[in-house]
Image (tube, rainbow, N blue to C red; front, side):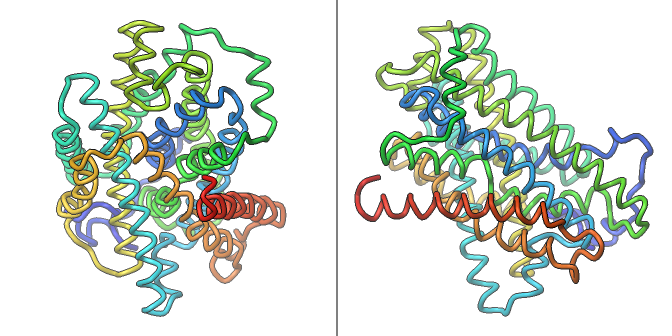
Length: 423
């Protein structure tokens, strides 16, 4: 068993210490909440606000379906780590030939970079809205603060890091849902939005972006390591079953919170921003929220965006470290990795690319890379040689296959529309 995937300051000897098992189920919760931060990052904000501002309640069904998929996917990831004692990147690294392993790492690293770009841009936008900082300066500040968060985790351990992340998740939830109390929702429109449908190629692009922002590849890679490192490798079948039951609750509760936040953002945009000029960008949406719902609501929204950027960029960096360690079998200091992955985001901010467009496109990249994480995860957790008696049931395999097929189909449609110039 290796140490925490994102803690280079801890030695393997320390990481091999027995993990204390507490009797209260609540003490077993936490890893899924760290992974859930990936589901409420700035990319989600951009995709959900854009969808609501352009199409109203039309794409609510995408978030409902994506969140249901995410619960299944994140549980399978945690289950793999608990049962096999290895993270998904480690299992893949052990089963691939060197050339294949390196090629797989390239696309997985693209996931980490796209994630980091989205999260740093989100933090920069929030600092600009709150304090008027130029976007490149805000991006740099976001990167520095994320280093501090990672340093706290490195010195105090995973449990402390979980508490910090859960606190940020609470801020995010309040920040993004407060506006719903000051707007009028349309129940009939919401009900209609639950029925699947599109309105032109642009809505397909947005749906792929929303899916990429909700079912996050780097969270799939990371959660297997988080669960294993939090609970250790359990050989007692009774205790392992108990851990798996607690993990189901952990995942369901954490992603229920994240899903509520995502749907709430779309509903806010659909009810307050639809048809307003410039509301398909984060800063435009913020200005519209301020003029429609008041300065206080707009400020709380910006604080939620800032917490989202700060928390998710730390989690994204952790995922990148685990991907590199598992696939390349190499480690670099986590702070050095933070500096390296910060550079592309600062370049995007420095050259003046529209930040909301960059966020949406980063989520499309993530959507394209989901199958590379999801298909191996389903196959491995359905392999008795890997999972033993905890192999997936036929029902689980069927549901996971259906989810994977839907994701792949949406991505193929997006590629076709892009190639033919219709997207």
